[in-house]
Image (cartoon, rainbow, N blue to C red; front, side, top):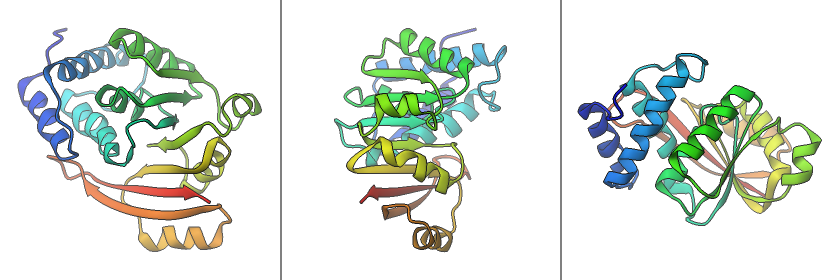
Length: 222
């Protein structure tokens, strides 16, 4: 398998990242290429993602992950819950090395892949943990430690907010990356549930060079 990404897909990555104010240099592109190569290789044996094309991974994984970058202060400590094959945490770490990133997933094979990628890419200040955020053990070690908690595909919104709360620092933020979301549904949720959050922003977007609609939801711990 060639390390080099097909040129049209490389262009999609570079130009798509610019939509989020990210300018990828040659080294960053090479890092994403290696990530892509390893993901495709592992995915032949382990079901890490249903998306199996270069273009699909660039659009629906890499660029989707990078879409949240504008909301992350440069020196944040971040917990990525249900990180799967490393999304969004690893792409964000690639483009912003100063982030302190912790990935948590309950599926051992996915965490094995995350650790392999972290080693292969030579990333520092990032850790992959095999655990469930519902378990007391992880809460005892990581409770109250994070500025931001991220999730792209973990549970429903209410469950995500409730489980995230004890891991956040005071005035920490939760960022939920969702598909299309009804504004009324979110506001109703915040009114009914005692979530102890303030809804700061609902930001709908369309992923670059695609029809895929996304919504970024920002909540602040009160």
